[in-house]
Image 1 (cartoon, each protein chain N blue to C red):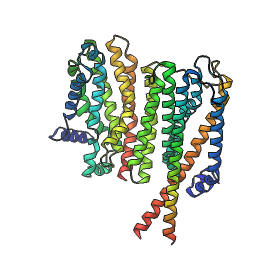
Image 2 (image 1 turned 180 degrees about the horizontal axis):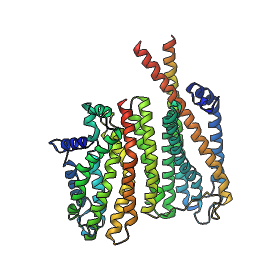
Image 3 (image 1 turned 90 degrees about the vertical axis):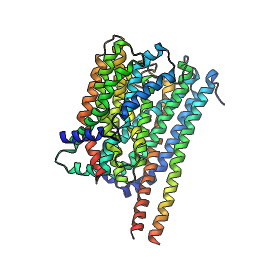
Length: 218
Length: 50
Length: 242
């Protein structure tokens, strides 16, 4: 499983692997938003945390279809299915690899890009913390979605249609925690819920992912 | 016969119109698909037997 | 002879054929009397005026929007556990009906909201939940449409329906947490003092019965269509082989 993880990381960071693309996308969205809503500092700082969350979510979505598609094309997925490690763990390894290449860099970049959006100084910690806590759930849910659509040609658009509704609870609790934290309110409940979603996703979704992969490889 | 709907007549009428149109649409669509599939099945059966 | 016998495609076709016209007839009867009773012969509410008449469409369609998803969940589970083809096809058949109900609930709600709350749309928990439910229906139907092999499609959509149900429930609580709403609480419960008055309640019950029956009839009709199309597909494949 570690070997698989390392292999995926190497593939993603190699040229053409798409690593960094998500980050650039994130940057561009954050730059575009002020053009859309106007440059007033008050407005921007009010919506900054929400924009960072939505942009991070979209950036994570961007690289989802790569999770299984390449392995499916060259037949590596069939080999993985017959490999001695359970398919559930393959799903987990893929999700972790996806998180390390998108979720983690996004969480680190978000507070830096927050400067552009006039993020309140009290919110920086919360943005980084909620993204660190929430993006693993996005990766795991996305891995499930990618497994679901792996057999479909040009399934990218379908993938986003399937995955985005599943992202709703994570987004709500993540953004809510930042909002409450920035205003100095008690943010324990949304933070706990966010952690709960991440833990729950990693506990349950690998089984759904493996089941769906088996169906697709039949 | 039409009851006096007061100042909200437009809203109530619109709600009923929208709902009935949507219901009619789903019934009509289901009906049309049913007819098409039945014809297709009859044709396929006829080819198989004939 | 067990209950499952009725799920055999051939048997299903034979017992549904006589039931279908009755189901449609009863559904039409309940709907027409319920709606006419509600529209013409009930008084206006002293606070909401005549907009209260929208309740005969809004509440039943909202109920059926949720029940349709629950029915799809049950049918998906039956398919995954017992592999009855009719069950998978019934789930597929219910989705377009469910999405129509969701759309009716959303649109009548918006039209009702304008005079009562002063806005067509508010990010109220119930409205938002229904919008999310609408998205789930869209995704489910899109996945059915995208896959060629019917058994694979049935398996994948069933898993999606199960995972989706969990996340839909989660969204419901998340949305509640996110925003307190304008919407009134449950208006149809048996133990509450603050309930809908009897004058409105009786036609409403009739209208709900009409929507339930219409849903049942439509699902039967659409399931029959799906069974036929599967048969056509099988015959075509046999032809192309020989």
